[in-house]
Image (cartoon, rainbow, N blue to C red; front, side, top):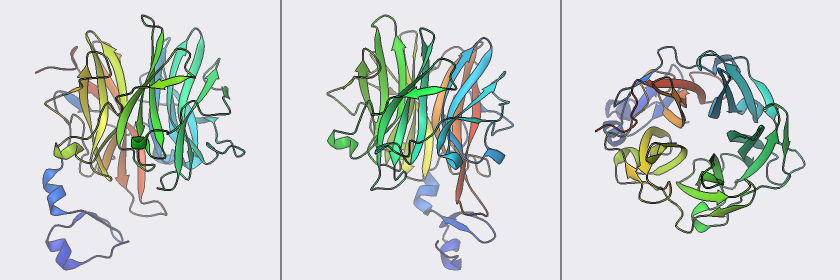
Length: 340
């Protein structure tokens, strides 16, 4: 780790300082960072809603059934996918492990994470990231599939249902988000590809059964832009269909360690994505649980407005880990997601 240097500190090169740890950044980046929320979004005052004693909890998927919020999320200390419930989306039950790495596998033996869960015809279906050597450049990530009757006990397919096989994907595809549309009778997936630590761009695929997927020929469908807050990467999206548009909540990176959440929309969910002029909507807060970065949004219609869950990262003043990620919430108290 870089040591403290008084001259560099005077020039503004450190962004966060603890007693025996210094986390560095450049004055150029610091001048471009976004903070807090925009466009009516408000972070929950008692964030985070899940993390703390449970360690790093991140990249989640939520369903609401019979008045109960059900969350599947990535639980890094256990290298698995975990499950929790809540009556209000804010106070969650202690997590339990529901899907662990397969030590005999050649593609998901090291860590499982980033689930996407839907319920169709009484069956829960999950797509997830299976990883070897996670968070390293030499690692590999594929997308797996599992089914369950109760959302807790899962039967997984032994082989991945999607693998990195396009140049832009490099060795890794991850962060699946899947919806099923009755009109077209198609499963639609948006996923991220590229770097194994943080992916680079967003792709799209379709399936008739949720297992055999056809990737869009025009992939990637969403890439970085010239806007400073997303000039390095775009990834890890949640897509929902609302009225006449597909709305994509996604994360943009100014650099690999700093991310914020933005919004885009498209008529068909594949082409002509229009970025929201007020982006980014959710950004880190100095001194908050999300002071380093905000990641992987999941948005749901609740009452007459909207609720978002996302994971925030912060630096740790002690211990072996430098960073902890925890899940927070935010609210938008209006009907329209896009209001100019």
